[in-house]
Image (cartoon, rainbow, N blue to C red; front, top):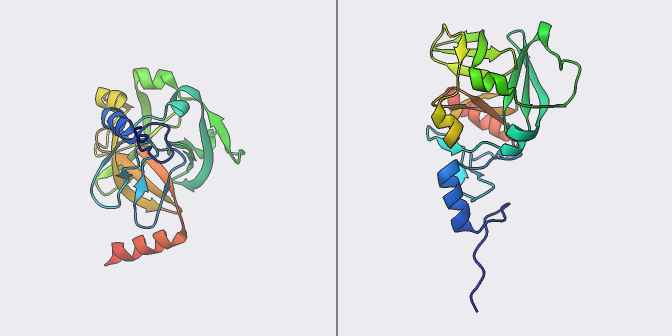
Amino acid sequence: MQAPSPTAINSSLPVATASAVCTLLGHRVHHTRIDEEFRTRCVRCDAPILGGNESASRVAHTLSCFLGWHHYVPVARRAAHNEYVCERCGHPLLFAVARDPYSSDSKFKKKVNYGCGLFGHRVHVVRTETDMTEYACRCGHSFVKRQSDLTVIRHPLACVLMGHLVSINEIRGGWAEYLCLRCGHPFCFRLANNELIRKTSISATV
């Protein structure tokens, strides 16, 4: 009698199958929190992802959010914009304070704006720092790009089909922000505890 195949943590798939799916589609994030050693695990195949160094991780689209609803919570107010993050997949939103339809909500659900995804996001500048410019669309979708004069941003086909290739960008408040190296799509994941913030701040000043 054969022993059952090992199963990845938080996944109903055997490890080999889960790894193959992640290789094809990207790793799965869901309710992800970044631990103090940056050893976050893929919830499908258990591989280490979202490292704190310059390595990049390919993350898959969270279909329950993309085809269903994002679940947003408020994070901060900066550069005259309110910032929100989906607690399930890390997708952020930025709305100008004067035009924010969710400013009075402690949490809310929102569908993806498929029209912007198909025809391109019409963006305005949120802030410019060093050699990077942060943009936001009227639908709330944000991007961080090296180009400083963009008015429309489209997702490249590689990101649509294969997920996003992300690496750490900055620690902001209680959140770690990652950026897609191809399209500039940010993702934010909650830090597991304040000790990570302290360690990151110390390492940044050394």
